Image 1 (spheres, rainbow, N blue to C red):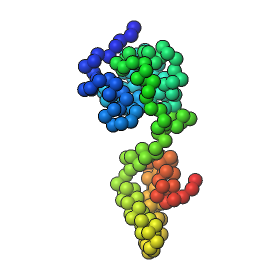
Image 2 (cartoon, one colour):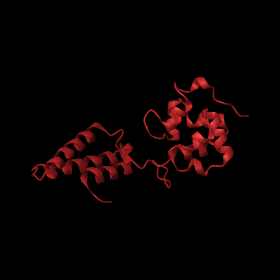
Image 3 (spheres, rainbow, N blue to C red):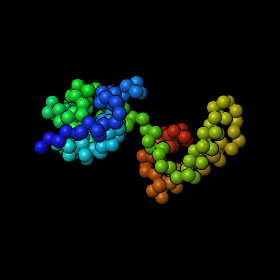
Image 4 (spheres, rainbow, N blue to C red):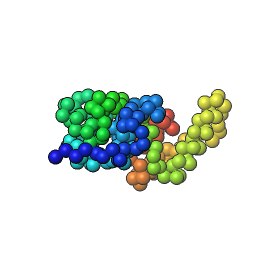
Length: 176
């Protein structure tokens, strides 16, 4: 049974405005569309009849909407209250096709413990001095402190190994 989402569940404006991101001047991805409609991937799956794994793969960028069959696109479009053509315009370029993770890895800096944030800020200030061609006599101490804080946060499972290496590469300028 196919259930069509009522128009009241859309935010203000035409569905095209929401879908194509005319307000921001860029294409939206499926997750952003769901967020604006206050809808979960699970709910979209239930309303559309499209398997939850397919919806998750499209939202994460692991699968491209262009690779879906016409029936899947039609079911999703009806559930979202838009046309198939509008749905085909969603942006999947922000995600790595192999992993489904965002290409912009700044998400790895979310939820860091306060002591680690302080160490990162100190390292950024020290690098700014060094990069300006001046000598920061405390650079090595700050570098070691940040490295120790990253290691401690990883050991205490306050951050993941992936986050730890991201921080080491970005702020300590290390290579894996």
